[in-house]
Length: 392
Image (cartoon, rainbow, N blue to C red; front, side, top):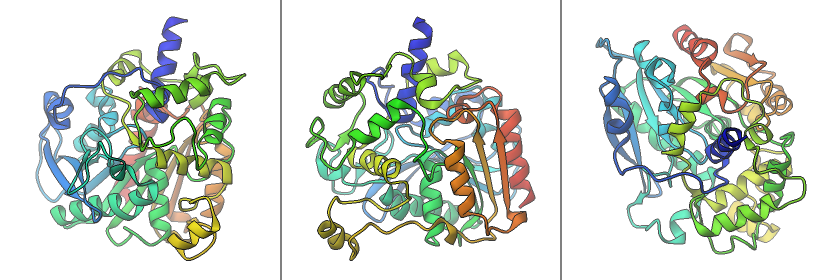
């Protein structure tokens, strides 16, 4: 029981940050911490967004065996409440960035604003609320374009993209507005998040309801830091809700993950979760409650009119994604966050997509964490991604 509870808390930290169980790692770069010790070359870069955030990026230019030439770049984007480290928790032969590098790709790792390696700005201080005044809308308009532009400027080639969870949401929203597509070769989306109205977990539903426009417990707290006191108090309130079991979170939130290695989760607790903005958590909750993929709702017609020129937040129309854009979607039958019914709604939005440009993989036994931490992902999912990229 103790091990099950421990795993539950860790994985809940991993995906939504709803606990304070993790310790902070030493302040070392991702290359030095997780890549070069495995025998791979790694380069650290800083990328500035149009709104002044300074993002950390890492590059693995080749595999351990070596090889030169004009390798195809791949940009890998993590989900919410984690950072680029989350791709390196398994051994090299089970970690997607290393597998891609060994397969001959030029691999780039993104780290979203607010996470440990991307907590800087040209003028704003992360200890001040102004630094945290953003949602995943700004990841669409600023972070993703900055990383794409940088990789393209360094390589001169169109980019393959891999996203997981929120990394798929911001990509789909971007593609729907015609962003990035001029520099994009193809996209692989793991546990794709767009529609969230069928999320099945009681705890997830309660959390979404709690994140309304004005959160009493978190009033004035701009940084959603799962290791902080204010967020800790908020989470205790959620866990006190009747019918909520905060001691078996692995299955009750993510679904029944089939293939997690305990040693991998032990590595996770040393590194994750990461901060995001409270406003971003509110936006994600709006996506759950309202059943649409839309920009942030400021809570009143007047405020929305000020920001958007219309009373309601504009919708991201996913049917506008270019029909000839090569897409690979992989989702799990046990995933309680990216529920198969919600993935079905996403696929319905893509029903006019060119048939030879859309590849869909359904993994019956997989839940949300298996796509990143699963020991069998290399054989089931990552091999398919490499084959998909090689066909483009």
